[in-house]
Image 1 (cartoon, one colour):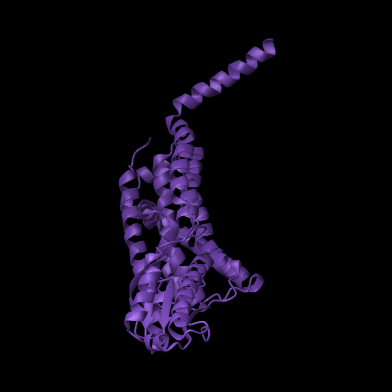
Image 2 (tube, one colour):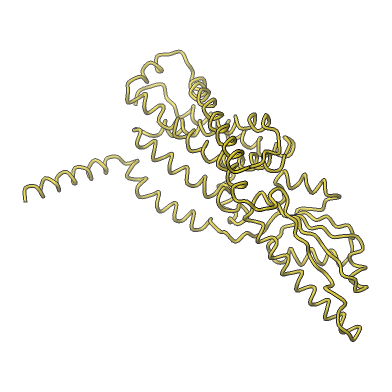
Length: 377
């Protein structure tokens, strides 16, 4: 019995200490509830509202009716029309669209004449999660339209239809074989950098406080902005090393193509790496212990993996979850790294995502600097 009492006494002591550590106790209770509500609501593998562009070479009532029918399914959101394949390619490389609908010349004339006609569906294969939804929905809709037209032909001519009046030909760009590794490996560059960069710096200030070296920083003439930037810069080199290893192994082991400029990718990645390091430093200004800093890092990592578009399609998320994803640096970097490596995107085609990363970095550095106080405690 005495052993049991000692065991219960130790357990009670741990509970009391845990209750006094309000941050850890709050995270233990709050994290499961927040993540259940957030991810249960946000994660949706049913991809709808795919951004779509139309290359209509006929501009007839029939071609407009076909596009309207596809939009009415709720799977395609038409962003606008393009003038040629090159403009469509630029739009898909920039990530502004996932699907392209191509309608050939004399589309309406051939339908009225009973001549079989083919349309084309171009799908961005760098995101395989959207391919099946895009193709299956289009094939089903066009198949139903073909049956209607066949019935009308039979009614008018009194004999069987000459062939399938209308068909759709799916074409997959950038990853025609739909290999998962080609899609995942570039994304892993962002995920691994997010995980390691935040963990490296999340415990920086806390570790110095625990070791007593924070006093040296307090009495130094270094300003708060200088201190934050000074903490960030050395780890950028580490981030580049990790990035190079992932890309090299992905190329050699998984045959992941690198279609675009590596110099451009490395240049844009510096802002992403710095943003993650700033997040880690911000966590270190809140946490009182290294354990708390580590817990915050893991808490932040999961939303990045689930809401950034790395595992689940961005288009499948409800609008509030998309708002959350836009404040995550990983969301914008995934579009940059996949655009450059898989599609050969230029700076002009990814500059929007890069500028959003710069805004996030500035906000994070200022926020982190304001949190840091040149005093103990």
